[in-house]
Length: 243
Image (tube, rainbow, N blue to C red; front, side):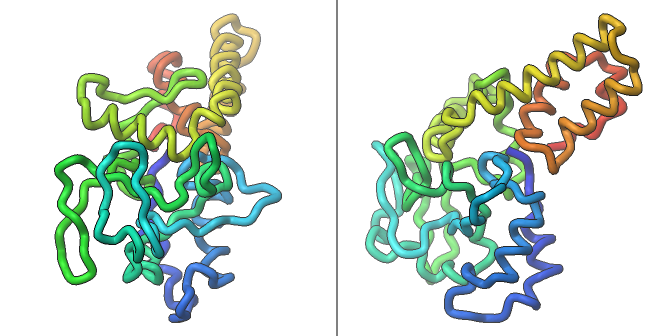
């Protein structure tokens, strides 16, 4: 997962989307949202090749369901966060793995909250404490890292952050994509090993690593984690490793 500046997208594009009663279905909006993160799912970094871009309502628009034992906004169970259905700040681009509820995961109508979270209402200004990690919140993205096919907490001693990772991993179906992420990790590991053994030049190493950590590459956050873990400092200094 990488940070996505949603506010920048809205400020530059929203005048072209109009004011329809089902804004998330607007073709221009869907195209702009899809393009904003290089035709990738905002939750998983899966490339949206051969599939439609689902405009997910981060806070569900029609109903909310409890996920496992976790707290949720129960008063909105049958109406959802309906006042946010046409608010593009509540939109995220999602692949089928993360968006559709299946036996293995999927976001569906889940929006779990921290145990002591206040509850957001249509007329209130309380700020909820979501458990789902949000790609549009830079601090959220910084909570997780990767190792091989695993998603790990940056601070394993923080129980709330561990819970957020566990909940997000289940709902976004991250484990289902573990093998795909591991291929990216192994590729970066191979590039670095070839450079260390002088099988490739420094220039070739830097070029290949820049491609792997580029924002338009699939699972680039995993590639960045691998570079941060395994690459020598002089190599890291030449790369853009900002999530």
